[in-house]
Length: 326
Ligand SMILES: NC(=O)c1cnc(OC2CCCC2)nc1N
Image 1 (cartoon, helix red, strand yellow):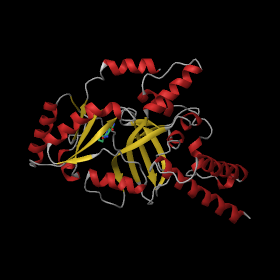
Image 2 (image 1 turned 135 degrees about the vertical axis):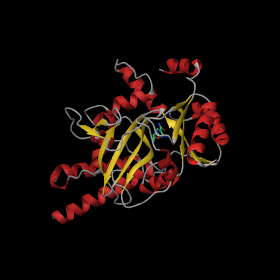
Image 3 (image 1 turned 135 degrees about the horizontal axis):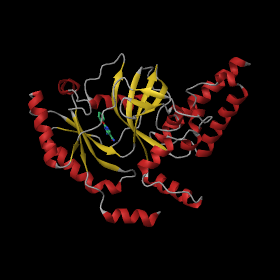
Image 4 (image 1 turned 90 degrees about the vertical axis):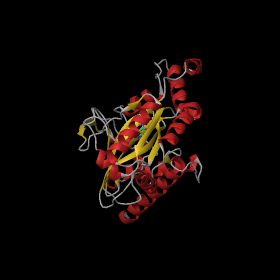
């Protein structure tokens, strides 16, 4: 009997994670929400009947377990640095000058990414299993919020390869989920969140994981500070690897040969950002080649091989819109 139950539980888990990936990462579901819920309810029932089969990587953790009384503190062996800001196009050209001068490369390849306005997370996987999710904190000490991180549907609980790896990225809430949440809070007479970033941060810092589980949080990875057994030679190859491992990758990431192209990408998204389903506050520009990154290194605060182009504060008109929507 027990062998059969174990097989059934494991088969259910795989099926549920497969459909979770289809829906939340590929945006291409194959079954209805009702069918998915039925699979999840069946798994939860089996795990409650046979607690000996509970497992940290079970998708039942995505709906949240028991509340914690506090978050343990964690240290980031590799500090989570912050980005130096460029307030203008001239700042980007100065950055390019510094990079070219210090790497003797006049034509380095850059990667440009939308700067998602959310909460930085560090994810640790051992043999491909998510074992720890932590906030950035002050860059060297963060909070272990693993049960809450497991409720973010686009964060894989198990990678497609059994790797020991650390992955960092931005957890965020879409504009639509933010408006819906504030609507619900208003109906309950609760104070609304000021913006999606606060809503995402506030949700992930709840001691009861059942709360973030209902908040439709999302995640885009943006760096691989540590990987064992594979050597990645560039940021772009790391992003490809993240996609292969099961993560959702932001579709607007681009490689550019010149800073002029980077600047026009920044101008393009400064105009188009209101059309995105999530908030961005700029563009992140990174030197693609890991050897060149290594050559430039980092200060105690920022990497010298990356910079953030921050958009000027959002036009007043769009703020007014938000007030009326709320
Ligand atoms: N908010 C973002 O979208 C974002 C933040 N950070 C980074 O890169 C880290 C890696 C090295 C220092 C900054 N990339 C991003 N896309």
